[in-house]
Image (cartoon, one colour):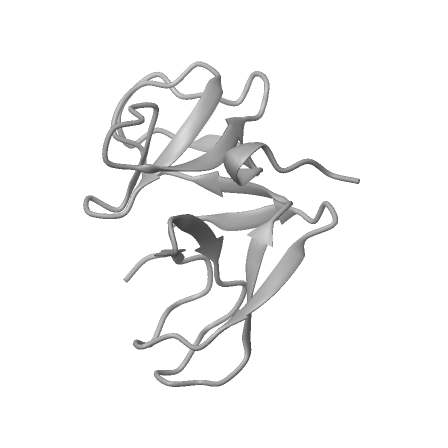
Length: 120
């Protein structure tokens, strides 16, 4: 499976340890307790204490469901796409100013700040 999000700028990334139930490639996004986490490295099935990025950092992705100009962005885990439609998705963060896309599948840059988390 291709990466969903590539870390391009490390901005005080906060981590949380999760024990995944499947192998994952670097950059995959999982939703755990209604919160989007990003794996910074390849993960083997049942690996213990994997440090998933809980928030922080700037990511680039081409997994988009439509054109996006800015503002809040959500992760639709069922379709494995970034979306600006809130229904059925979890808040991932905000599109970096000037880094939206003009069509579905276009490249965006996103600041990972789920549910209003801030750098500090």
